[in-house]
Amino acid sequence: NHRELFWTEEEGNRLGSAHFLDNAGWLENESVIGFLAGVGGHLRMGTLLSRQSCKARLSSPEGMGLAEFLYPALQAYDFLHLYRHYGCLIQLGGADQLGNIMSGYDLVSKYLKLFTFISGMEIDHIMQVHAKEPEKRGPQKRLAAEVTKLVHGRNGLESAKRCTKAFYYNNVDVLESMSDEELQELFREAPYIEMLLEPGTTVLDLCRKANAIADGPKGYRDITVGAVSINHITETNPDAVLILGQHILSNGLSLLRIGKRNYYIIKWLQLSHE
Image (cartoon, rainbow, N blue to C red; front, side, top):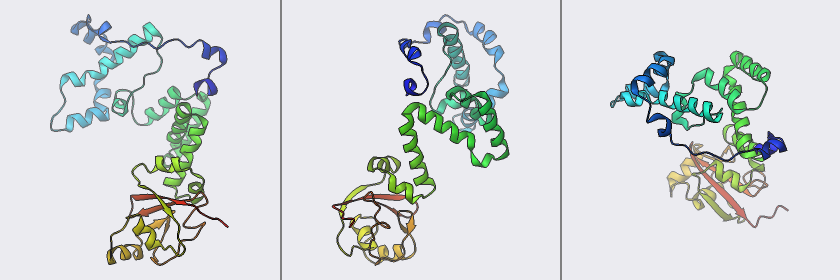
């Protein structure tokens, strides 16, 4: 993806090999006093204490030890060493590392500059719009799009957009355009069930064949009170016959939901659209 989207052919050919380094190589000979006087003098207590990870640990029953509190200082020094000796410009970490880097508004603004290749002028415009309409989460969406494109390519970004619209905006048209693999990725915990469509199959039949509702009157009642939806449309008539194009999408799939969070992906076999 880097070669296709960002690097010239010459830049791609100049890529060096990866280096695996042990920070003991530069920390083991560093004295505690020297480290605190040098690195410690450049770190502000208020900033360290404001990190969400630090607040969470301090408020926990176990508390926070001095060694854990000083960890961000060691990580910062590692990054400084790599920058000085290897020209390292980017530091990546898991979610638990975010507090060691930045937070809140600065997190979004600086991450846009670190992990995207859009111009500084465009970033400034994005942040200005964000200041007026923070509820639209413009920078977060743009950041997610840029990083997704960087990691998964353009096709991966388009797939992610379809999944987002299908899940968060209940977009049936997008749901209809999704592949089996995209649906399974989006609803990872959802059972994937293959069924043959028999003439006269009802909403109740579908729910029972999928083992999605309880047997007897309770399952029937769950449908009548609106606990069942098919392709984001609530179904309250258990005896309604399934209709192609409504309950069964043109891609041969149905997304069955029971309650708020229990999803079932139904793949219909040997469909005739005539």
